[in-house]
Length: 170
Length: 406
Image (cartoon, rainbow over all chains, first blue to last red):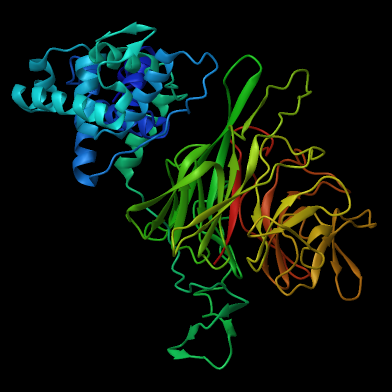
């Protein structure tokens, strides 16, 4: 890597690291330290192929997804960071629900969480999710379905019917 | 609102809590360089797990025999592979090993000040490690390192502060990572090479204010305490210990091991005592005799006899006090060298010093900051230059040795 390439890499990291770090944070279930590790590992892979990578951001994102899923495969464990407790000042039920949802998301497997992040945070269609994770569309669909079911199991208050901001669903 | 929408909103809100680490690109580039060079470790030959001198260690095996007649035995260690005095008197920093008696410079760093804002700067270190294979020092990519007594293993930090500490044993060995409860700014091996002493900081201890008109505001320290890591069990215990608010040592206030490894200490700027001692559980304890009488890095001599002291003699800057008799012995200029500081004991009768080229009474060629490592006989015998002169130890680019038991 020459000086010009290094400068381009630094500019890329400076511009895109907020968005990439948000993604890493979600993939690791809200564990800041694990998220930093994940992003650094993905960036290290990217910089090793810097000359040949045409779309660095897409490359880093894919590296993070695959790395996270492969770490999970290898270790069969997930990093669970407990989000802050319920004692939020406004006491709004919607806020409480989202706290419950965070706890539940943090307890999913890395693969389940990755599928939900791709579908609901990145808003990607199932086919693209399958391409990124290197699996079939059917697997994406069934994993997403199981993940949502698992969330309801982990947080019974998320089971429908539920109420958000006083808005009842029957 | 459907559960899909709830998941979507939760993920967006949650992601707001992510914090972007500082200098991320630099970290990645350093990591890449590290993977290129592998984690080479020193190491300078010594095989003794226990260092020279006498340590009381529970039921140790000595030369194949188990002495179980006592609950603890005094182990006289294998003699060091060499007590030979070696150096590189023409170079600063040295290119070949610097060692004398039971002490060696297995690592050193060259420091720099990097400005990070209009009024703040960070001291950075480029660490070099002695490579026995190549018989020279080689630069490493680590942000901090400490070589174990005997030179077989190295403890490293990837950045300062760091959330984990690494231990590398043997050339090209894998790094064993140990996660820490609190961020680390320094790590030091225990004298028996079985534990690590980590000083914990909430921020970067090397950050300081940029001097203005030769005056520099003191940066408050972010030190939070220390962690003792037991390498056999992998267990570590953090002990909260913020510095005394009267301490005037700036951001970095690291802990050190006592000579026998049973206590740790920190510098103390308010009398009585230049050091405060604690046990490994964080409780204040009295220190060994004489240890808190000096700020000099050499401390008490291995046999406990000599302590660096002030001298009334105007023809010397340094002196040694005999603990038993109270006699004070000036460390006088020798061979045209003015002794400025006592930095490490080579053995009971020889001390490694910083010395400048003397230009008459209390005056140095160039400045007092132009100095070299010099081995001095406390009884006034021959002095041996160990390195060349560094140009100015107050300026970026200067080097600092780290002394390790051989």
